[in-house]
Amino acid sequence: MSHESEIRRAPYRQWGDLADEISIQQMENACELPISVKGALMPDAHSGYGLPIGGVLATEGAVIPYAVGMDIACRMCLTVIDRPVSDLEDKEDELRDALVRETLFGTGAGFRKGQKLKHEVMDEGWDHSQVLRNLKDKAWAQLGTSGSGNHFAEFGELTLPEDDLGLEAGTYLALLSHSGSRGTGAQIAQHYSKLAADLHPELPKHLTSLAWLDLDSEAGQEYWHAMELMGRYAAANHELIHRKVVGHLGAESIFNLENHHNFAWREVHDGKDVVVHRKGATPAGDGDLGIIPGSMATPGYVVRGKGHPESLNSASHGAGRAMSRKAAFKAFTWEEGREFLARKRVNLISAGLDEVPMAYKDIEAVMEAQDDLVARVARFDPRLVRMNQGR
Figure 1 (tube, rainbow, N blue to C red):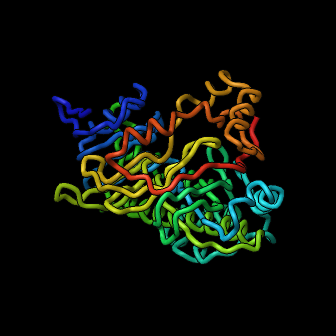
Figure 2 (figure 1 turned 45 degrees about the vertical axis):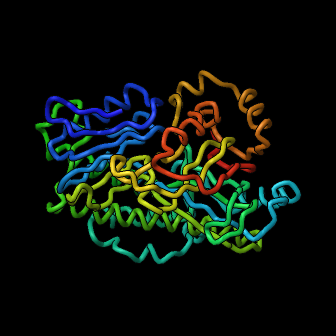
Figure 3 (figure 1 turned 90 degrees about the vertical axis):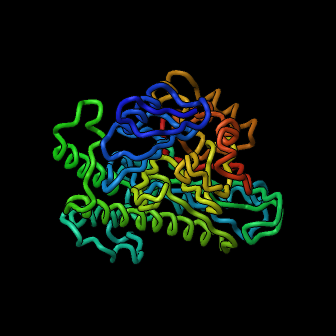
């Protein structure tokens, strides 16, 4: 469906009918901004700070920190491993040991001084602003770790129905991870969101969390540099996690793919230079490869973008939550969760009850709603999952 306002609201299009009313209202609010040019709402959409998760917004000459998101450059990373898929059953203990020993989860989790990992990203641009200088030590301590919430590292079965991705058709053992820029990205988001709000006291209450920074201002340039650094930092986190886990197995990577989904890009749409914010949305330009996960016990997909102009070359970033974390704690029990996992042949190392699959939308319905945005290339079925230990 399409939405256009009689008064100064930029046009946007919604995919599917799975979004809740709050998400739709947040999208409409974002389109009221004088800097907004065009928007899109993905089928996995649910409410967030400012722009809804699953919201895509093109603006002119400005970036909105809360439209990028709190976890800047949160991303997916997939590694296909040169080990037989039968290892998921035959050598489950070995795979479990690799995840337990080589990943670190939790809010604030990090390595001690002598355990810190090394990566060239820690030599890139941290002196650009006082904000980054103050956060460098935190970033280094958390380099190569994962957060809490819906972040995970898991082994599963990748099914490739046709020769593609440089691989022959078949089934493969694969490692999939989801995490972002950790506490550093969150503090950058908070700092520049507050600064943006202070710069725009004229905004009505329902738009204050969508305050922006002009790209030609010092603050805008500072944020843009920090955001791009967080993109490289989040990529480094995944690189290290995958290197450690795959190395623990004495295995090799035969295919690797990653994409981020909380970011802003300078792009050209409808002949105009714009900034495209994809908050919980996957880049899906014509031919672009991406990863759209389901939940801990439902499939995810490797996809190839179709470059749909009305979606601003975007697709969903996952199945999307069907309910809040608080509601999930009230609605489900671990007994129900374990029954669901058993039916799907998933072994869970650790997670919170708020992450059970029933708290998420139907990934198949989400994928069907966006079949004009992406083509499915391969299917990933989780088998051994590690998330932050919750209640």
